[in-house]
Length: 192
Image (cartoon, rainbow, N blue to C red; front, side, top):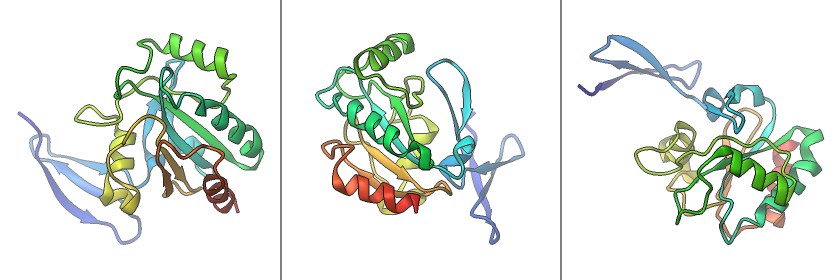
């Protein structure tokens, strides 16, 4: 039997949504920001995104065999340019678009480090759309959570800029290069 959820309350002191699973009788806190979620990194370690609290994040769904794969170079350049100021690129490989990602995390890591010298944090391959979308991407694409930045992932290399408190402050579609002036300006504004 699927759990049915009832909205209990929004807390005035914190933007946390409380829900109760009827068939289990337990309260569950829905994430207030993306920093309340976690994911498995490409080495198999569970990583709470709360470890990045106080940092500016660029969360990107990547693919190793896409026409936009060259953007790994720009993402790495941004990481190197701004990491000392509290900026982190987080790469989330996905095979949701035309079978453009390797099946194993080992192959993904070998490609990213071998071809593009990627040193920014990479995560295990996930789904970024549909019923099997990872909770991070369900959160990022939910207009009720992220307002005008919500909406479906359109292709590989969609980019979400997250401020130091975990809120989405900008979104850039696939064709927008990582080092595009609009992306750089948004990163610099978030870092100030």
